[in-house]
Amino acid sequence: MDPRVEPAGDSAKNGKTMATFHFDLVSPEKLAFSGEVDQVDVPGVEGDFGVLAGHAPVVATVRPGILTITAAGKRDKVIVLGGLAEMSDKGLTVLADVATTIAELDRVKFAETIKEMEEKLAEKEGSELDHAIERLDHFKSIQNELNTTAMH
Image 1 (cartoon, rainbow, N blue to C red):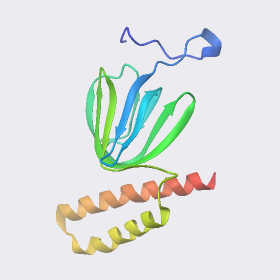
Image 2: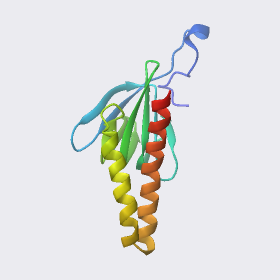
Image 3: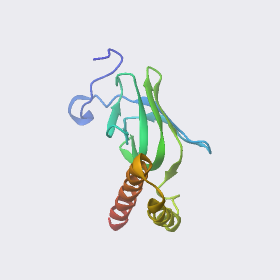
Image 4: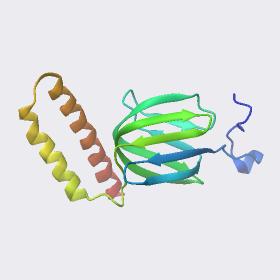
């Protein structure tokens, strides 16, 4: 274990709190988030992964999905549509193609985007079709999670 990192624990039991690390979420339009966090759950192309303080250095491709930021007992969800994540000794940086909070998302426009993607599938073939279907599936999973979140 990294000696700079305190072990996670229940502050009520042993006086220790979860170690934090610096996280930046950047998109071409804006710096969507910058600050100290407890954990970030990233939708990765090779599988979703959680990052805690002291995580090993890694570079990973981000797929369209929902990125969850946990800080000070609060969880924020951000929709990311691809990008790159890098964990280093300076912290985690996610360079997202698009980063939009659930509150900022235009759900009607998002649904229209999915419909357009479905209609364009007939124009594709081979590996291009496979890639389009995979991307569409990611968009639909985001929409499903948004619908589930809206119900609660």
